[in-house]
Image 1 (cartoon, rainbow, N blue to C red):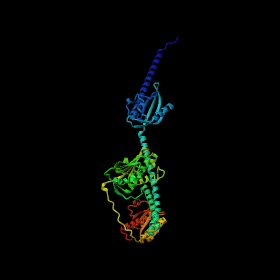
Image 2 (cartoon, one colour):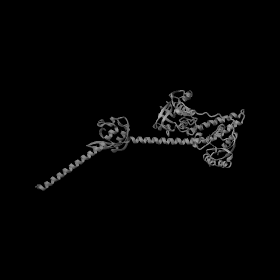
Image 3 (cartoon, rainbow, N blue to C red):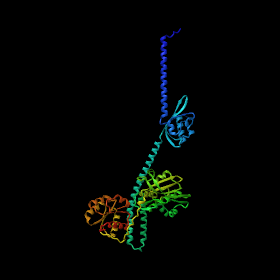
Image 4 (cartoon, helix red, strand yellow):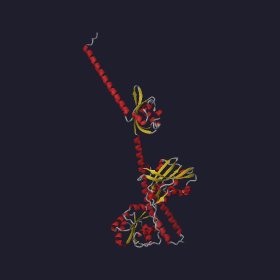
Length: 548
C-alpha cells in the first residue's frame, strides 16, 4: 500500500509547478518579443524581402523594401505570383532560381533583373532559402537593389573605353604625323629638283613632259601627307567665314554624281545658319568622304542618302558623348549630318572606323574617316556617330558657330614678283645631304650666298665665326646632336636679333604655335617650292632687314 504524500511534499510540488509556469510565461514573453523584433526587422529592412509558398509560388508576405523596389502596394502583391505580375525581365533568371533551390535548398548572390510597376527595370542581388513554417514549405527571398551600382559600373566601363579609344587615336595620330614628316623630307628632294630642272631645260625639250609627270605624282603624295597630318591634327588651314548651307548647295551636282545610281540624295538644309570659320576645301573633303561612305553602305540596293545642315545648342553632357569631346565648350554649333539607309555597323566595326586605312571593303583607298576625324579635330569640332547593324548610319559633324561680331574679312596676300632676288649670306642647316644641297641651290638661284651645316651644333660654330656676314639662318627642326629648336635658343643667346627660319615636315601652324612669342622670323613647311621660299624671304625682308 503506497504512502500518502506529506503536506511538505505537496507544497514542494506546488512550488515546482508555479516555477514551471513562470518559466513558461517568461519563455512565451521572450518569444513574443523575438517575433515582434523579427516582424519589425522584416517590415523595415531596406532590402526587399518576400515570403512565397513553395508549392505554387504565391506571395504570402512582403516588406516595405519590396514595395519600394517594385513600386507595387502590398494588396497588389499578396495572393499573386511573380509570373502573374510579370516581374522577371528574363524568364531564365527565374528558372536559375528555381533550379538552384531544388538542387541545394538555397541560392546566394544571384543577379536578376526585375520589371517594376512603372515599367522600369531594376537590377537586384538575390539570396533565397527553403524554410518549413507551420508544416508548410516556404521560400524566403532577400534582394538588394544594385541598380545604381550597375549603372555606375556601366558608365565607368564606357568612360574607360572612351579613354582607350582616345589614347589609341592619339597614338595613331603621332604615328601618322611622324610618317608624314619623314615622307615630306623625301618629297622635298623630288619636287625641289624637278622644279629646278624645269627652270633649266628648254620648253621644247622632250624630257619636260616626264618631269611634269614627276611633279604631279609627287604633289599627289604630298596630298596624302597632308591627309596624314590632318589625321594627327597637325595641318595648316586657310580659314574663311563660311555658310555651310551655301557650301553644300554648291556641291549638290558633285554629290549626286558621287553616289550609287540606285541611291536617292535628299538635301535638308536650314536657312539662316550662323557662320562657321573653316577651310572650305577641307569641309568639302569631309562631305565627299561621308557621302562616298554612305553610298558604299547602301551598295547595290535601293536606298536614301540625306545630307542635312542645321544649328544645335550643345551642352556639356551632349558633347561628352561625341568622338572629340575633350576641351569642347558648350554652346552653339552648326552641324553637318549625313544619313544613309545602308547596311549599318556592328559594335566591332564601329570601334575601328576612325583608324587610318581601316576599311570593310576588299581594298582600301586612303585615310577616309581618319582624315575626317583629323580635319574636325583641327577645326575644334566634334563627331557623333549613330549606327544600327542592318538599319543604316548617321554621321553628325559639329563646327563651333561664329558670333556675327567676330566675322572678319581675310586680308588678301600681296602680289609677289617672280623676278625678286635677295642678297647677303644665309646659313642653312639640314642633316639630310640631298635636302641641304637642294636648299643651297634654291637660295643661290634667289641671289644669296650660302653656308651649310649638317646639324645645329655645326651651325652654331659657323655662326660664332662668321656672325657679321650672316644675314639669316635656316634650320631644319629635326636634326641629330642638336635640333633646330635647341639651335634657335643658342643663336638667340649669341645674338637676340638673329633672323631664323625653321623648316619642318610638320605643319606651319603647329611649329609656329610652338614658338609663339619667341621672335621666330618664319616657318617653312616641307616640301616647299622655290616660289614658297621666295615669298617667305620677301616677307622677312619687308620687316626692315635690307640685306635680304
